[in-house]
Image (cartoon, rainbow, N blue to C red):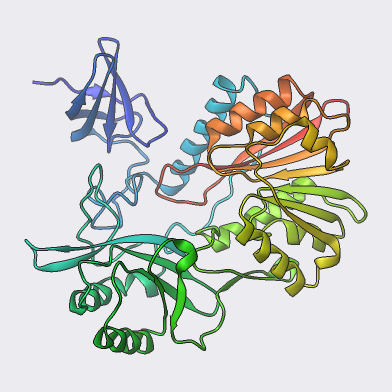
Amino acid sequence: MIAPVIIESLDQEGRGVAHVDGKAIFIEGALPGELVTYSPYRKKQNFELAQVAQILKPAFGRVVPRCEYFGTCGGCSMQHLDARAQVAAKQRVLEDNLKHIGKVEPELILPAIYGAAWGYRYRARLSVRYVAKKDAVLVGFHEKRSSFIADMQTCEIMPARMSALVMPLRKLIDALSIRQRLPQIEVSLGEDVDVLVLRILEPLNTQDEAMLKVFADQHRIQFFLQPGGPKTAYRFYPQDAPELNYTLPEFDILMPFHPTEFTQVNPSMNRVLVRRALNLLDPRPGERIADLFCGLGNFTLPIARCGAHVVGYEGSAALVRRAEENADRNRLASRTQFTETNLFEVDEAWLQEQGHFDKMLIDPPREGAIAVATSLGKAKTLPRRIVYVSCNPATLARDAAVLVHRNGYSLRAAGVVNMFPHTTHVESIALFERAND
């Protein structure tokens, strides 16, 4: 019989960490300070993966999960921990990565940015599968550690109007002729329209099309159909629906986007993130600022609205075109310039060709921006201030090491943004300045 253990901390996957005879045990569902028993499901020489079996002494921060599918559905992993304690845990993950990977510590820990803990997810990719044993179609997220789809009827992290569509969608797809050839639904909820993109591996027949139209009218949504990759998605019905967009009211910006283009899943937190980024960057009229990994202009256009001239760099040609359209739409074309660039392959020669930038904003994907950080070390003139928005604390820490130890920057401040409540995803923001400024 396995003896109870005391949980020492949380790892980056939200699992409780304990040690038995020097061996690390990572226990799903356990929280720091708790006395638990556990059931291993994978044993290695130096560690074990397990799930909690019994909680003998609960942690003060433990709460009852709001979602009845928590523990089965893989969409969330931390609903059993108080929302503010979740953020504190993420802050520790950020600080630990900066300290141990980057060998740096911020001079100031920024107050964590909080938002609504429920109904926040306006973007989602739902899997679809017809299950013969159940004689039913399932629509939802995958189960934990499984390719199976959770048999869910609602979703607490999506807005109520989308959560209410899970069962109607299951019934609709079950009635389609291609129910076994429709593996995915991409959800994009906007200010004026809600879009569902159906990934179809075979064409719809006339009856299928009619059912989709009735469903769209009844539930006030718009369907796109996607027969191939993301670029093949096209408007199906209704054709005259409002355009999909989100807004940044503080900067008087309307941001149209295509439902398969990347945007933040949490629009209310994105507004707060943009505000903090610009407060740290402090763009001024007449400054020349670089926005790296600019996407459709989420930071570029607010920076330009402050009077600076902004050059946006992005690897996707489609997003570059979208950013240019959005700049024109918001009457900011004269202050912006967008360039298609693979920022994972840039070097010091490329950076020199771009000319001097007073400041820089970097918002890379999970891979980080190591090529950019390395190139900066060999530039003749460096931006005096860099704001780095990160979705991966490990790559932020790695890049911070280069910026600080090789390039002469100081890490002035860093903090987390709780963009994804109830998950282990850590979004953060950091401010770097030249040490002699």
